[in-house]
Image: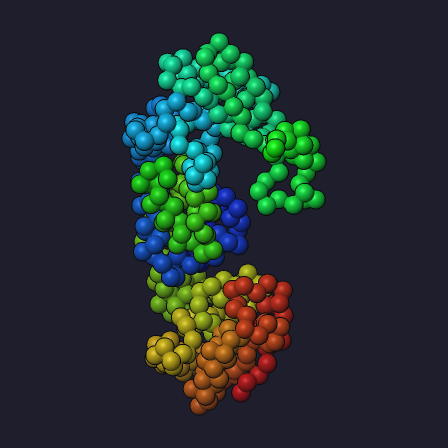
Length: 198
Length: 198
Ligand SMILES: [Zn+2]
Ligand SMILES: [Zn+2]
């Protein structure tokens, strides 16, 4: 529109999730007109983040160090290990405040048709981690999708020989969810997995 | 969450219009996990844009050169001048495809309570521009807000002594609406139905 570099900025903003052409334009104009300092700060933050953030060597979540702050914490329960598909899941569980153990990030789920088998999501490394004997309970928190379920079931099989409790996060009707808007499959699972109250 | 630089990136993304804490987090994670190349490209585009984009010396819209591509075009009608509040409005009118003249960007509107008088939005410079005699019609396309209307009326008064037609973009732009958010068709109609003010 105004110049090549303006158009390039609009284009570059399109990498952001759920940012279409109109909002990319609005964002570019907002920064150029009203917040150049913020734009320069954002450029620096992007450079710093892409330069320094990488996988934790232990849990494969994100960190700037060799080992992330959760893996290196002495206040987290070493005996509880929560297995998730991605760092986004670590973030979601941390923000729920419901877990004080440690994590293991697979980096995906089993998907044989896409050539993603146990090796590709580091299951041998997870089994090795579990074999060290510190962990007493593994909480499988892979997604409640077909692939996430298959991955959870595979992990149960693959760790059968180890002296561990293995649990799966509960599946059911979400908090505040009204039954008439919950999909049939979820509802059917919720009835099947009903819990005793008395 | 994962590290200081991750949190700084989330914070830096908050400068974008209508990006709250949750979507900033989602954006940061998306870039770090799935599109580092895109993130580096965005950082470069931001640096390039903030380094090179500035006001056109003639119309005060945005350009990388001394004079913008609209001001320097020989295919645009020199006798028609459209006065707008901001470069966002130039963008909106250009995208409506309804105007083939030139522009003048005020950089705001009169707002006496905020200490913004005629000098602050460069009205003397606009009058000087009009006095050169090239322009035959001024189209006032300030916003349809109270301040935009007051600015338009002020401009009619301030240019009373000049041999010019002065028009105001027509109704069709909703009352209180800001130009940059109006759809192209409405805007195109409004330019077409512009009404004479002097
Ligand atoms: Zn870690
Ligand atoms: Zn110009």
